[in-house]
Every structure is written in structure tokens, then in C-alpha cells.
Length: 347
Image 1: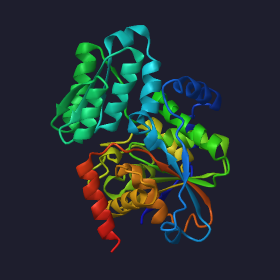
Image 2: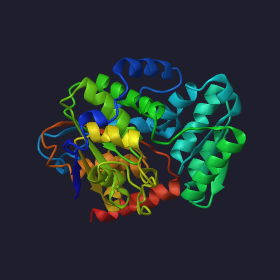
Image 3: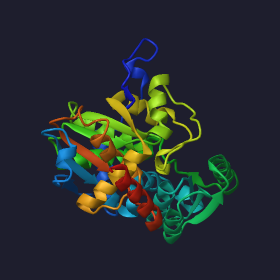
Image 4: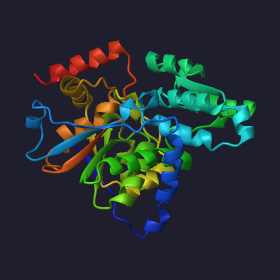
């Protein structure tokens, strides 16, 4: 296990150099507005007798079921907040996004309920189930050769068609949307002593941590990344955003090509530590979530559970822990393959 703790502030990185989070009053206002089309996702105690022996003594884990959110992931929160914040002229032109899948689906949904059109760009390697879902929500889907070609195409759409780019993990609107998840979670479980949140580009964690820290400063906030896509850990070590090497993980929705200042800065400000998990650990957590609570999740959706059962097991011994299950957009064939791998890894 490699763990990257929140860096101590130095003269080159004073506290006031890091970005300010959205205020709780603004988060609450957006939250109430978004509830007209989004779900308040439920909690589920993870107390199956097959899980108990895997946890340290006294640990009480509760799953936050964000996989039940509209579009199947948390991404709808940020995308809807951004699209609803556009003026009439921007809505008339339309929106665009680049994504391996979940963000594309979320932007397609946000456009469909906001009276605008979406053109989303996805790499050819994107999961077919996510391409199908984005199309079902009414988006025009453009398949690009790779992530670099995808970003180039989005830039062309902005330049030539005037489409507004909805960023997958950075920017005030995106983080404000994910902050509504943190506020909702604390309202449901105000006695949590720690939370575990998956990290890709950092947009989910930046928002969740911003809200949770303001509501409950003593609640410990842990991030988890795949070993083969540990860009936020690298960003902590570097003291700011980094460009990453090609990712190597089955959790493609936790594998951005780079990190960016706003989301990285908020993570550096509020996250207590980041741990990494292997693909085998992700698959095992997928298997256990399916076996014990009948949740069919994608690899990213199992990351927080994998961290609790693995690198954070002793750290969180005896604590009341919230575990975010963030998404479930995966096709049946891939799910079966990953779950079988997870079952084998336990032998």
C-alpha cells in the first residue's frame, strides 16, 4: 500500500493559496433545485456476516448508494449543475463533453432535462453500455481514436459550433454539484467518523470533501485510487496538478490523463490521506458487494469498499465509516468477468 497524506502547508504553499470551497448555503440551494430531477440516494449498513470477519474489530461500515442516482453514477450531480447554470444563448447552442462514459451519460441526461442538445466525445475503447446509454438520453456520440483525439474534437466543437464544454472533473459548477452529495450524506449520517471516496480527476472528492469538512471538521476523509492511475497521489507529492503516464487499470472512470488546479487544490486542502488498490482488490470488492448486498457495480464503484477491506482496514478499526458506492454503469459480460476474477482472488 502507498498512502499519500494531505501535505503540510509550507511557505511555498500557504493555506490561502488553495481554492475556497463552495459555501454551505450555496450547496444547499443547488441541492434543493437539483432534487427536482435527481435522487436522494439511500444508505445501507454493510453488516453481512460474510463481511464482518473482513473488517477490524468494532468497525461499522455503511454504504452510500450513489449507484442508484439518475444515470447510474454521481456524475449527474455535477453535469446538471453546470448545464442549469448556462444562459439562454448557451443553451440554444448546446453542450459538449469528453468522457470514457459516465460523464458523457450524465451530460446527455442534463441536456435532455434542460432543453438543450449534447454532443459527447468518447474514446473508441469506451464501454459499449455507456455509449448506448448516452445515446438513449438523446446525445450525439462521437467516437475518437484515443483520449487525446477526444479532447481535440471537443475543442473543435467549441470553436466551430459554439458548444459549451462541461468539464468531467474540474470547475466551480462541477464541484458544486458533487458537494451536494457530501451535504446529503452528512445529513443522513451525521455521526460518521470517516468517509472513503474514490478519486479519478478529483471532482467527486473535491466536492464531497468540501461539504463534509465544513459540516463536520472532525470527520476523516480518505481517497482511494487504482494503483495504475494514481494521479492525485502524484499531485499531492508534486504540490499541484500533474500530467500522468498512460493509465493501467480496469477502473477506466478513475483514470484521467491529468489533474487540474481547482479540484486538486480542494483535495489538497481537505483530504486527509489517499491510498491505492490493485485491480484484483477492485474485483474482489465487486464480488463481495454482489455476494453480500446484491449490488452490481463497476470497478470504480467498488474502490471505496476495496480500500476499507484492504489498505484502510487497520486505520479505520472501530470507526463508523461511510463507504461511497459511486457507480454501476457496466455491461453484463464485463461485470461477470471481473466478479469471477474477484472470486478467484479470494481462493
